[in-house]
Length: 530
Image (cartoon, rainbow, N blue to C red; front, side):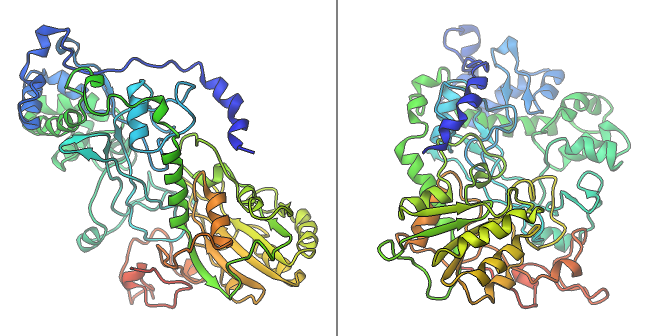
């Protein structure tokens, strides 16, 4: 059964969202503006962007520096919303994307994003991927996707984000809006640079008190080469900063030129996009068989075989019955994680395994991922004892780890560890442990358990996660054994506070170092480089 059937009430509620008219500049039906050099496609993108910028008043320039770019009506340049997200497909985060019945549920970059833009439901600029340094195992770190292009013309645009010392969101009462990250210049180099997040200028002025005035705050940002502000701080205070001689107007001009070059490469200033490449993409290009196969392939390639004691793969001919246990055994939304939209459909792990074995029994064990109620553990353990093969699907979800919610330690929540041990003690056959989360937890207890015949890390595998997991378990896909991060021992969280930004060793406080580059302890699993 496709889970999309359960989304019908949600989609009905979304029908009230209008299908916005597609905006574009340089409309040939407006000759008084379409003759400007900014509309001349024979010129370079840079020259066209310079021409546009030169025509703007100071107030108009400031109004274009936020994600809600105001547009310039006298030049027939419409407003543009820069903020769209696409970490896990086109996401319903930010102001640029709207889901309704015009297109099928969900979308993935980049053809589907452009298709949604063509019917007025999405933007062209996506703030993905996230490339934060994976400094600490307790913060949620995930990698996104990029768009593609034809020559210099972009189908959609992607923008990497965050970079430096940016993996503390909220940990033991310390939040990112008040935390003063101490890092050295060498640390900055090792962390790959700096990029701002939403309202960051407002935060470092109003909360952190890093700048004396709003105008000082925008001056610092623009002189540090910031071109776009998620928020309205630049739009409100840039004009006055220039009038106070805190910053030269030429720096603002350069920021706008960079931004407009992106929009020009996207065809925003080429007139009616239906007459240009990618203009034919529409609802029929969303949730196609090809794109759903891409989601399936991504899920399979993301699975890591951590341990196999000759238990995998299972045979569908000799496995007569199967028990699936665990709160993530019937996961749906948990599989797509944060910064996601509405998938075309879900295949739960339980459903994927049912495609191989007719006799599959499911017991939750824990109603919720925090697993604080032990009442269902014993009944699930009794069910497990009736089968010679148990697939236990455990881990985390967005109630445990997400933006603005760091974990305090590396242990499985609630009674999950006890549940694994109880099932192992109760069964006569083999247990396959499937662990679903973005950031590692300590599973040394399972690694050393003889009844655990195989361990798979599946991350948050997306809409096709159930089919991917089943194919690996039954041998139709051979997974890699390459972990994308270092798995630290349980005591690591007690040794290292998240507020310590260091990567290298510090002998004065017995700091054990961080990441595969510097950590010298014995990891549970190592990051694999090939």
